[in-house]
Image (cartoon, rainbow, N blue to C red; front, side, top):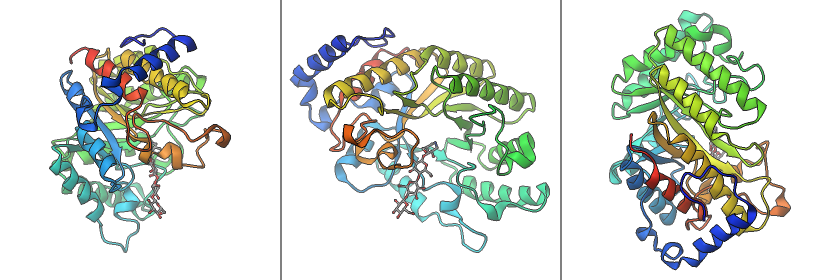
Length: 368
Ligand code: G3I
């Protein structure tokens, strides 16, 4: 049986035995949804906020999982710049975002602001002919959005700034033209508009052992050091944690990054955690056990650090999960091996081995 926090690489036999034991523990596997340990409570007891991306899908069972296990919800795409104001002529439209606050209010949850800038979802109307004009336009956007939600305690101000090849700042959309001056401007504007909020920069592929992660970790760290040297207001590093069976996780290297960021005065948030099981076997019990082990090893390794204050899943349930519907994703499962099973709950919103593994790790995590 996988022990909490175990960092040994289990054998297939051990994993199956573990999964088998779990399957034989009726008290655990047949627990009604409202009898499962609430992950948000397990986390809160250790000083860790637990949450998930939320799609607003109306399914009652899906919503019950989000409500029971999440202290924080992140609008999965509805709060991104083009969704709020797609062009100069359109008015700001907060009607969808407001629904997240309605839901959060009913379930004593926080809403995480995601995101004020991401090259993937540009707002071209906010790009002027000069930096001064751009600051007026983009600054107006940040002030309007961040200013509308003073209850937001945490913002992803800028998302995915480091290039996957150069491991330096991306060279496109605004960051390419204005570099750190633009980053500093966004952070300072967000601080003025939302003085109550902790501000983060969020990135991916900084959690694994593959060379790309080694390079990106170095690039992210260099970026954080530059930003802090500029005196920009930055409070946290978002470690997206989209994990892949194809790229083995490196909890120790991620811990070291967290520690370096902490040395710069930054919290770390595990901000978009999921496990892409594309190379794992078709057999569901075996695959679920292997996915559970990846979650367990990664969280046990990273939660050792007191600077980790949040774990947000990027879809706590397979019922609504980007890994299943992003058919263009570079790392798709071969269709003949069955749909991906990246999350803690399955497509029927029933708990999987990963849920129980995460619950065990959270219960054993050091208090921060
Ligand atoms: O549901 C609507 C559908 O009603 C509509 O007909 C269709 C066409 O407009 O859009 C559908 O919404 C799409 C949504 O995913 C659900 O499928 C949006 O267009 C699409 O933009 C959205 O993609 C999101 C993507 O970010 C871009 O915003 C994904 O849900 C979301 O999981 C993904 O999340 C990103 C993080 O923000 C940053 N880190 C990487 C992560 C994964 O790419």
